[in-house]
Image 1 (cartoon, rainbow, N blue to C red):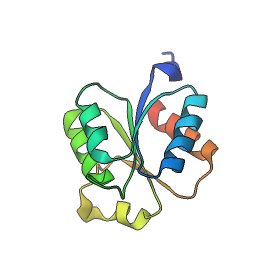
Image 2: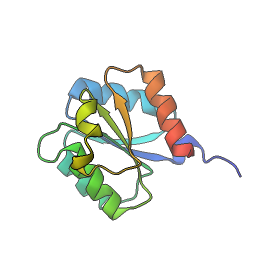
Image 3: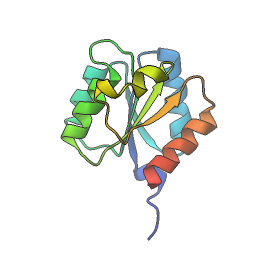
Image 4: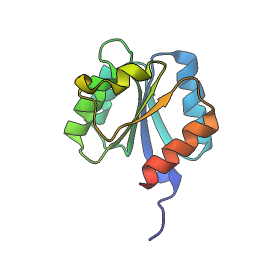
Length: 126
């Protein structure tokens, strides 16, 4: 079995911090991924309804729809989508009451871009 080339893997990124979003998009595109990004959960969700993505990479604290709600809705739309939260509030993500998808990964800010890329690669290879 051969691994799909990274370029064929589509990542949907939802991050309301403009600098962080640009930084993440650049790192993931440099690693060969096809990245579509939004600055809020609602816009990201609307895009998810239009086409499938392999990975949802989302901040947790965002306006309009937070990352946990976005992840919940994303996995309802597509049970196979992988989810990774990027957050400065790991405790929020880990709270069992928030109904975040159980298999979601959490990457706590601050992190190195190479850590992000390797976590994404690991998650998509699983």
